[in-house]
Image 1 (cartoon, one colour):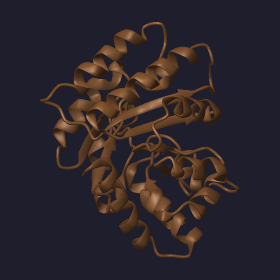
Image 2 (cartoon, one colour; image 1 turned 90 degrees about the vertical axis):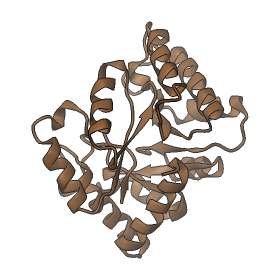
Image 3 (cartoon, helix red, strand yellow; image 1 turned 90 degrees about the horizontal axis):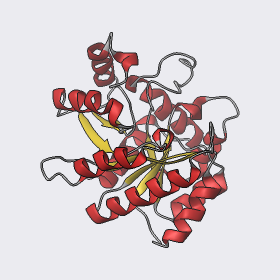
Image 4 (cartoon, helix red, strand yellow; image 1 turned 135 degrees about the vertical axis):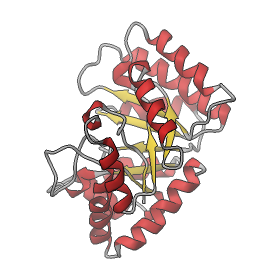
Length: 255
């Protein structure tokens, strides 16, 4: 299995990161994709990736909740690294729009997202999109970009079945994590409806642990619970889910 979105460089893993990685390997997780947040967490991300080059792959981008008046300074860091020929990233991410906590910087978030999506296009990299309470705004922005088909994933998907189908039509994969195991979760309907060939597995660790670990710190080893739930929803085996979603991840991120 490939955990296509995990923050195990986060401080939440400082006391047992090595054990967390071993549990992931024992659970059958062979690759961890590390999304960027901002310059504050960049050193931690880079240190982990350097320590485990066979396991970890990095993304580079500016998270929408890190966008404020100083976004130009943050974007300069992203641009410098993305275009550094000595560095390799599997995606521009995580980037996007987040109106859950605050709408103060919506226009700045739009500007930051558009610029990073243009860099992704220039570098022929996929994007990992973070979208929270902002699907209408995102689809409107994508219409304005008028690119037709996109390469990327809508990570930690939180929209409706109709929004998922719209995203798939535009070329996006749907990132499915622990929320799919929650009772009455809309994501379960999405995971049962969207073609398996457009689904990626993720944890978003340390956040959103699946049942039966809900409420605790999430970690990559719990990806097997996500795969098992998707399998049950679709009437297939976890092994089939693993095979197809792993192939999806390898294709999208050129792994």
